[in-house]
Length: 178
Image (cartoon, rainbow, N blue to C red):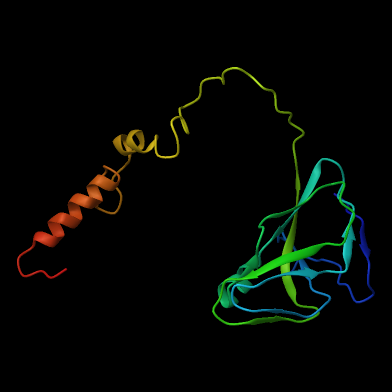
């Protein structure tokens, strides 16, 4: 898909893929920013895009920045709708213990373009049957899952119960301190 991109500032960097097979296009900062530990900042890119109808842009973190400095995209993935024409800004958050400096030209996030469906929600009185996931709350499926869980890593195939039994046996060994 061809996506028109406009430089709003002459120093803006047109996003490119670092490697031909990469999914993400690198987004670069056009202004310096300081991110103290726990701090957030909207980093301008100096760019506007015209994502076509039927497509969306997702602003996602750069894994190296997250791993090395604890800096990630606060609202990941940030959604860019097809109708948005404003400047792309990346909302960064510093989850690390040290301050992080963003310099103009730094790659701060990636833009991933993806097709989206145009499904519509329709209110109904009851939902069609499914395999039962999510019925009764987030923990409701746990009991059913345990009964058919395969044995993993020698801890037993009974989900959390097998691991708990193994830990109890481990603690009972004579001379063993836990």
